[in-house]
Length: 233
Image: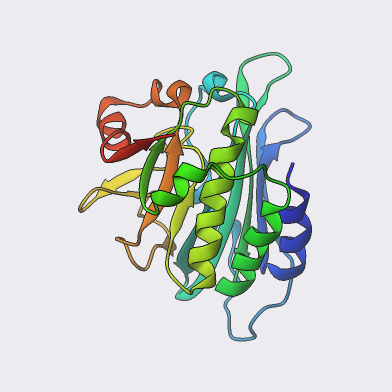
């Protein structure tokens, strides 16, 4: 749990979008407006954000893991900054399932402040990650605790870039290939393109990490991309 993310974002973000399982053991989504935001901003719906949901049915390899991610997007011609968290929880009777919390900010600097607040709950960043501002980090971590230093380094890098007003995609752990599509000079998108939600600059820089357990589950084309131009950590 990241209290700083939930507490800060609910005061500053425009929307909170959540995926969880309900009392009938089915997936359910909810969209809550946290603040009023700009008067001229059109209302968005859950349907606009369904592309943020992770796809896949087998999550056993990632039980206990989480992925923090962030990106600048446009929804219905309005710019937002998304900070999201995916957690893989064990199912009481079978396998595992993802829970998603995504917060939509209208202001990049407020989103950067949220990342800064989150750093207070993360361990010390892995120093070597700072020498790689873009690309893929192939982490050697196996457990969530081991991955914490890599996670902290990526969040710190993103916080710095956003504070400078720069476009920057980040994902602290690639859990599956579901949300990714390769375009151009390979660039990972976080969702399918047929959506009201788009990335304005499809070539904006990114920093992500992958671990051995998660890498082993990726299909060959995604695995090849994830291990090209990488730096070990």
